[in-house]
Image 1 (cartoon, rainbow, N blue to C red):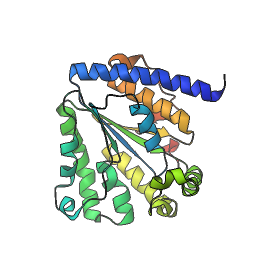
Image 2: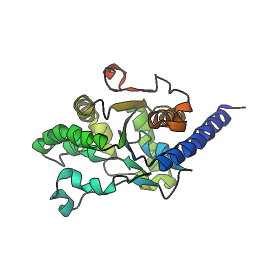
Image 3: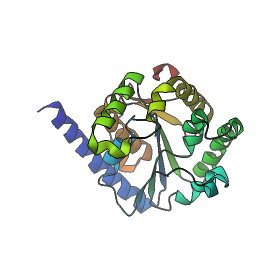
Image 4: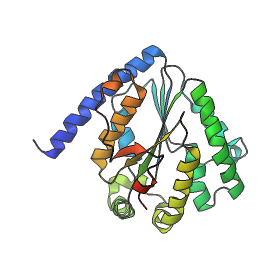
Length: 248
């Protein structure tokens, strides 16, 4: 049996456990939010696809919001996201989230420095309210090395099946690498808290990252998910106190 077979078998076992775990959350009326953040090409789409492949389509929503309209920009910043939060038994996955204001917006000049500062103060308060109301909030930062990112971004352009992954901002991911690093470090430092901590995933090895993401999510949700194997601590680790493990 080759490595591909090993991966497929491990993934299938985790997906079965994910189905069992979601059935438990539906029965218990639990509300779950999973935030996927990370640099461009870090593997958010692929991880979400494997995680949700067999989850209940009626109780699972993947949210990937487009560029905000002028109307959106006139609202309280979090107002765009609150209607999308889960009801009892639902799981909502954000493929990028309110944390746009901690990364791409300040780096690309899409928000003012004052708006960035206000967000860093408000995000922990907002998330504290969610946690106090019983929502399970799982925040994942998918980390990738500069070299691996460059290779993945180049591969997107050459692959006709990845047309919808190509963005006008792709070139900026490499050109503004240091600015994104600084924004990431500040975001993790100021919005990591005990009721909604940040978990970092090293994603240079895609398949390994996917398996460990699912393991972490299962064990965090609990119920049947508590039976999942512990994630590899070299792949999945808390942001707090582990800045030296982040790619720079």
